[in-house]
Length: 553
Ligand code: ADP
Image 1 (cartoon, rainbow, N blue to C red):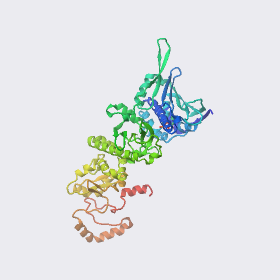
Image 2 (tube, rainbow, N blue to C red):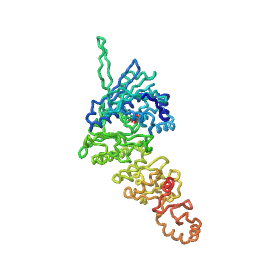
Image 3 (tube, rainbow, N blue to C red):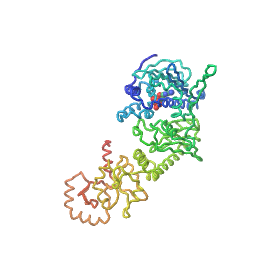
Image 4 (cartoon, helix red, strand yellow):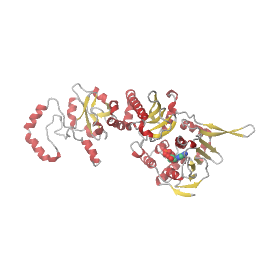
């Protein structure tokens, strides 16, 4: 061993950035390393449910060495083999690295970057914000693989060596930069742990040295975090700061700002506790498939099982993050068994109902925040209209659209729309298209404007798809105004007469337009424009047709 290897280009760029440009809030490096340590313990603890010989007193230890200017973070978690080290913190750049760099380029704002590091799965590298050299020594638990040491100064290369570590787990030694010596102070380290990692389930220990009267030293272990699972506590006893740091700890979203925390304490048929968060802003990667939201974290009686439990939430609520802690599932539940577990289906039902009712509450009590939320996540929420028929009515109460009568950017609910309908109006009218400007100038609107009827503007790509299964709201039918089967009251006679009187003109237009149209007919729906193009009642809407064309279908 003792081999040198090069970082992949993206990793090198990332490291370069960590070393040279990120100075704000460097404290979070410790949050990231402690989170990795806790994840590693979660993993081995889960293994130990079926291999009891792996069980231990789980802990994360911090050690400060002032003379040598090092800070060490040690866990007795799962550890890594040499291949895993190379894969996880070496040559192979993960999808997150690229996405992170791409965001940097687009945002150009480096101020809040450290906050976002966790979101992209590049937390380990944040060590280089404070360290000029990082030494990671690790031994895989429950395997014969020898211990390995990874060393790097973050400048393009890293070195792999054999190591003499006996105990399974990982030790990360940071040789602090000259301007990062504050991290050698125990008060500073305690403060950061309290702030960001208080709820971590395993004790985070920092030895405390006391000088006795006779000048001898006594070292005692001091546990820095309270280890209280925040989701088990009473909401009234949780501070804003605690919510924020827990929210930022949940791996799939960065930042500390959330819109709403939702506690669930379910009893009876299915017993579980949950703490969920509605996010404020869509994470940068919401629509990127390879780093899409993974699911909720699942615990069973406070033991971590997985952070990718997709069965706990329907897809259209994938912006929700949080923890579910079940009392009913067996502790030795395997990840495969989770696939078809009936308890999970019950939990999903309760969680879905609760999230939808909280959204409704938000809409009713804080419309402004709701609208902001809907602008960020509405198009994901709308998927539910097409996929979750059981909750369709609740979802219809939650969707918002712009309309002919709203200002650009302002939205109304379906309930607002129905309330504003004049008595003569029997149906809910809508038009789909790719943006407000194009639907707002459609001649098809003229008739409705003249009648004083509003028309909903559906300009999300997903709206056409959704409307295939939205038939009614409050017993009123939805009707696309761009479709042909449309009757204007009292116009039938006049139209028939016109059609006969101008038969020659119609014939001429039909011949002239050839296959471009399937029919030419008189219409009562126009008031200012001489003509407009419409589609047949059951044909694809023009917008959907364009979409399909774009997808080469
Ligand atoms: P993330 O934790 O978001 O995946 P990181 O860059 O922080 O991204 O870590 C990369 C990977 O390295 C982790 O997914 C994990 O597999 C491995 N790793 C990091 N720290 C540890 C540790 N203390 N023990 C075991 N594995 C670790």
